[in-house]
Length: 225
Image (cartoon, rainbow, N blue to C red; front, side, top):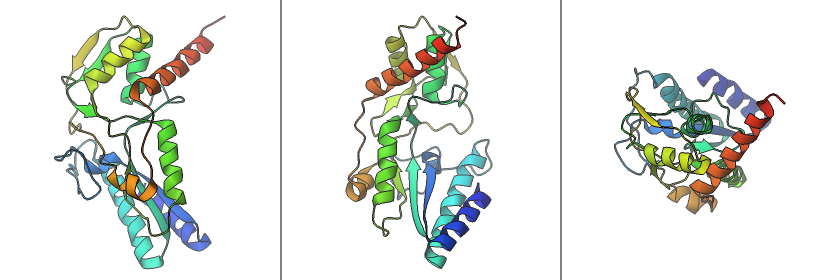
């Protein structure tokens, strides 16, 4: 990740392009504050099983700002919180896609931990709108800026909602919590509202229904005729 970022920043320097760094809420690690604002430095285990991704993104942000300060490269850094919607890969391991696939197949829905940990899911259309607004902003708006939906839900609530929309016969099963799994995830989007005039508008139930519809259509296409 860092070397790829460096190469692209060099290209942006040579061409005068604006560089967008799609960073992540994982910057904040297993956050000790709620909600997470851009001024929070995070709570990240640098040698844990999630560290490669977390620290890679943190390093990439550092490189972006070094190039901005030293070479005047125009940068835009956004910290993306959990995004979902149609065209999710079935194998990407995200909460929404995992639960939807299990529910549509009437297989047990696996929750790691007791389901009380929280996530804030942002529908893809809203996220694209936020990215476009960031790129359209003035050059002095470098970020980092959180992009996500501050509407917070427990993992159990998300599972129950997906089961209700799909009318699934699945049962909930519980497994051990992965090491360093974030217990709370909710963005403070005050800066995005102020600087970008952006906020998400798609309700979770609406977005999940659209996403479930996409997966249903994929299943019907995959079924032998």
